[in-house]
Length: 317
Image 1 (cartoon, rainbow, N blue to C red):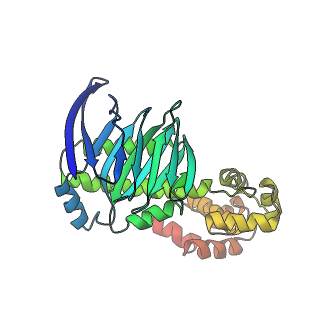
Image 2 (tube, helix red, strand yellow; image 1 turned 135 degrees about the vertical axis):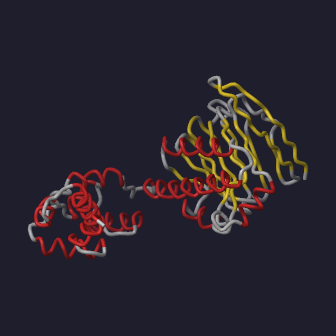
Image 3 (cartoon, rainbow, N blue to C red; image 1 turned 90 degrees about the vertical axis):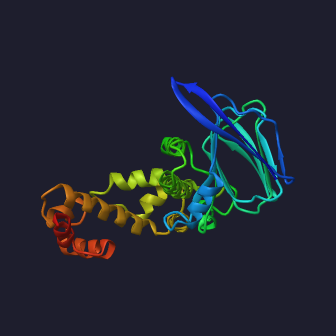
């Protein structure tokens, strides 16, 4: 193995940024001589900090090994016979191509590549519309679990998420703060948050051919009716599915039946009303579509774990 580290300084918006350009060559890796562009970033975690993070109880479960940003990465390509760690790539512009195991995918803006340890793979930017990507190599005792949460395949869709882009930028800022273990622990915690957000977003975009559910659209309908009622037929009609297929697909995506999910949203809304108003429990029951305050209170306790009155008292404490 040969390691090459080069420091580069660039002026971006009159703020000096120092980038660590790291190449780790292995016989199993085939890399292009793709040059890092002026606004590109590669940041490697030094070995002594990797060892420190792996031994620290606050971040031993997951920590970054390397992170980066490749804007309009023309001619960028990589092939590995065996991935030595876990890799996340988020495409925000352009197109690319991924092959992992026996499967291939076309990659576009809003797509995620999630590659587990040990999986042979190759990927490349499109020649005509090269991708812009954010990426992170990571490891840890729970790295496999975080990767599996994103999905069972190497490809997932989450759409364009400004929050995730901001999280990557924050991660870069943290890691430019010098070789402080506290900064790296903070960056590890940020990475955990990012991966859990990606898993959540991928779940919301999950679909199967011919049986897709627009969960955002269904949730919007539910939110519009928090003060009233919705039946299963109305929800199924919104998804253009039968009640049976809608319920089955909805539960696959969310882990709950549609009506359970709707009740949970209602109880969440009730909590907001208990927090932000002085309305009586009876009034809040009416505001969430329940004429019977006792029935509302029983539902609230089933979902939240305590009665509405106890919830309000605990808030005051």
